[in-house]
Length: 342
Image 1 (cartoon, rainbow, N blue to C red):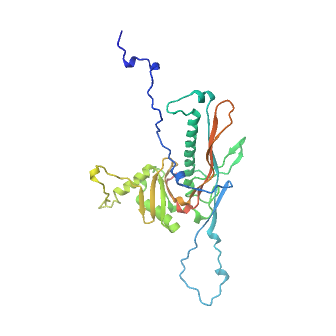
Image 2 (tube, rainbow, N blue to C red):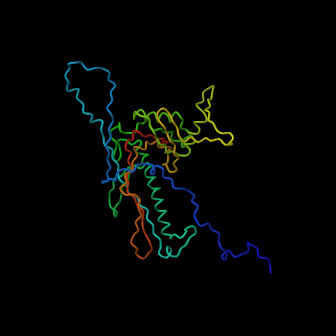
Image 3 (cartoon, one colour):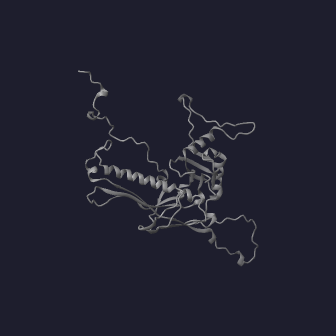
């Protein structure tokens, strides 16, 4: 009888060698929602918060002794107060597994869990990812209208990429210009400049200076940015501005015994404040970076992410994960962003 070789054995009769746990090809990445403070639970679908600016003066003249107060001298400072508004939003991820599939299916990597148990964990991760996308998004807030049976329009909360730069038009406008993000706090590349290598160090300093001039205090910002934008900060370290005669180099030190050179800028400190760079993998299109003062970013959670199992009707286990929340940018003037012209 002929010698049996490995490749000649019947595939269907072989015991498979499969790893007992899944290898994840990507990790959960929700930095903004993880870092944002969770405000008080709202009791209305319309969220409101007051904002005011400190009165200042550049007048250096004195007041005449004995001069009576005139009607023209009175002031009430009401023009230095305003109300900002945002809306709630509900998100939901539903799951359902057939009765037979959930009862008898035993897949690789499940480690004793059921299909429904695995799907529940995945739905929760997807809901968290969706909340992050909503939080940093460019979407405008929307008031719910219609019914399920007739042209339904659900509530939508405004994303931070629109809060920064929101003006006096659209839903829930910011009518007082002094409460809007200053134009100089937003750097915009040309329409065809789809890469942040067009952003210079001078552009970054100008945005920070604009925020500083508006808030009158040094900033402590988180810059949620694309990886390409962080690489641009690394390039700032390598060289300075090139002139007609010189190209001044900046020095960075490394331990030569380690046989490696580190070029990873994680913090940038300038006269206007400190920037901590945090790469973000799911910023909206044409948004290179969000410069956020996190003390003014709030997530108002009407309902934290939860799992609800639906009533069993014989078809198999079903359920959903949902959350109700609002994205609140309490002070748009303390923020900035780097975007591509749309």
